[in-house]
Length: 279
Image (cartoon, rainbow, N blue to C red; front, side, top):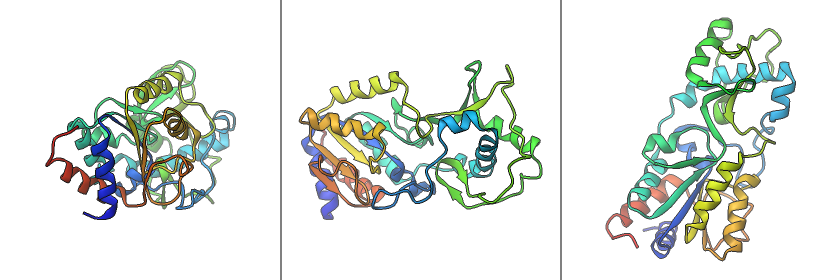
């Protein structure tokens, strides 16, 4: 075993009930880009805020045009070794719950159950007027039907189904409304600058309360919505391990920092742990 795998196995062997918190680094192996570099800085400008999405029609059209081009990559993404390994850890009974900051649904596709999607899911839309939820796949077809001149465009993929169309003119792009009431449709995700719904936060803290340690995988924890769980675990005196490439906001709080590829380290660790009983 490499040193990284040894440290990960040692942490998982020592903690009977581990809570998992995952971030974008888990999904990069599935071809989905992440937001931050190894120093925790934005690779590009910050994503659109919820306030701008609601109040600026041109920026909303820009969001949906880029999403129309970027969605097929995210929709077609498949779980990678990191997702499969984390599902295996759950099947081995080594974890209490999985909280993810990702919005791609790949943990569930890999077989993980009772996942707390902290920031929601991109494959579902919500109407801001009547609260009706609908599949993103159906809306994709409506976008293409209403904007045939855009359908053949291609662009560099960006995080969370976005695409780089920075110099395009979005003024004529048509954004369909809710089929039930005509209201504004929004991905059922927490946009930058928005708060996580209270019930999800409560469920996540309850999962932390029922755990003996916290393992963070693929997250820099630069966003407070995830960082707060590391703070809470530290305040409770729970051991914390972080497996990710680069620095994190919680480096001073963690007991075990593993700077390694998520997929490779997790796959090797799970294979080793499968040969011994869970604690």
